[in-house]
Length: 112
Image (cartoon, rainbow, N blue to C red; front, top):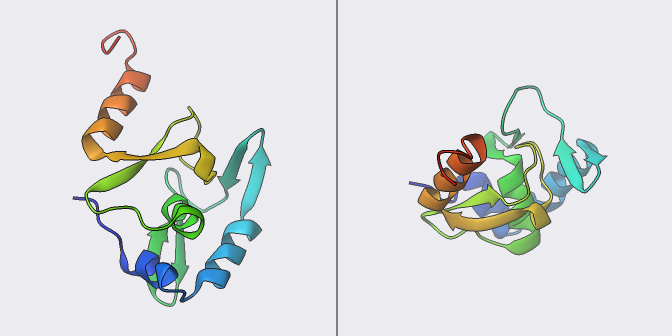
């Protein structure tokens, strides 16, 4: 189940929004159209604020487009790295669609 976490809700409510926006801007490298969020681990990057943690790409979406509906997730439409936080490269989809698309990208012959 994918639901909005506490830090995303705080940002939606106007709390910490400018702080999160500044952190996103401070840690972004631009690579072509991608906005790559530099972090300390592989995979999806996270942001910590006031004892709360959330994935950077979800916070970028929340700041720019609003709430991600419950039971939905973000899919990187454009074949780019999971570190990309460009909201124009993402789409709100069900978890099932996200998994199907990910499998099709990893195993194109099987899912063609």
